[in-house]
Image (cartoon, rainbow, N blue to C red; front, side, top):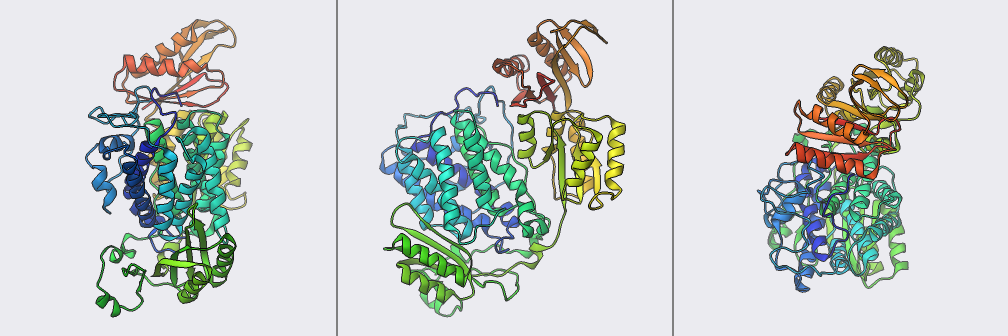
Length: 635
């Protein structure tokens, strides 16, 4: 991405509180989406609710820690809404403290002007209205880790608590930086894998590990870019979860907990970079909205007299009853209870023994620490009493929670089996397509190579984004051969009319696996066709074009495949080309910078657009393609 003026180099304690508030806002808005994706390990449609409850406990502790440090007198809803890309109509206090969910406002903003809400507030300001900013991020994160572990709900909540612990252990003192963010994600991944009795790929674990790997591989030294790399890596891994876990593929969904983790990482991008990434909505076509009833019994305390007459209800040490009822029934052979409790006064060796004991009783075993003396245990099992007894042997228990578990049989029904194959040139462009969930074919592309790539796709339905790599008649022939069933399996193959990578990216942005293939292909084709595209190239030799003769080294501006601008100065050619393309209108310009583009080119073109065409949004990526200095898309 082109560098955005004012991006945070480090995040202090105040910024970490704002990050937590943004996490709450995002988890609230995506709660129903995440709940609907929940089919593993138990299809009880509560992952989004559990993540929200866990983060709420952590944020409450963070706000208290910040207030105790005398660093802030309150929260700043304007800055939170601004970073989240909202219209500012929901204050963070109401939004963070209640269970209501609002609509999702996915917006793309101008990279050259930063991010502010309609009132002019800027999330990147470290100090507003005289508020001090010297809070220690390490102290705030430590408070979040302790409270997140103590208040964790469900399997996903416990794993989220370890993400917080990883951050706390990597930062310790001082601010969050690019370097300790890399260390934090690595540490969190190690903690989660070590806490699971049976690590499973295609879950929060594998997505967290992918985020850590992408952050470690990011060559940039800016915190915002490392955070963005981690979030984009998580997004790519999230799209891969159905291919890693059969139950997800059968239900046609991505992993619910991993979707929540992406919300958390995107919030970190919003705080550090000033804008949140735009993500697709992940839908489940395997769960009917009418089959899952949200649980509210945990939110309304009952008297002890009422509790005595309610079977199946267990109280924690505070006397508050804890019970969940689910609206559907499941196979009686699956684990019947979710058991959770906190432990103290124990040792690492006794915790290891507890983890092994719980694994013998059931599955989904997670036992994690808060970095101090506190531990949290989670298991799905048929004998809740035995699980509690195992904890009593390990240490002192508190906050015992036992919830009835049943499986939603409709959650595992099959759905669409569709993949996207995109042709891309350049490592950066390939990563963009991969991060959006596509399988990428790069290198030299021939009809034979494309056909082979289609036949390697595991999905029955394949949408192909050729991105100008082959002529139309070749694509028709490849499509016919792929549909003939000569490969491993017969499949439905649809070639989409993307003549360039920028058109392909526009098409991929509207992909929706919840639609039938024909409708999905139509929407994507419409998005590609609605994107005018052009390119800046350097003439390799003297040649005759439709607008005159060019000399070797001249800048050539193309609209589609036709040269429309020749200028001895490639930079001037690019500006002229942009003026002509935007002269026909446009709201968003995408710049895909080639391998030979200078560091200043993207910034200069973005500045030219904002100065000449106020109100037009600009987004620039490093594509790394070899032929075009810049590919330009105008929507």
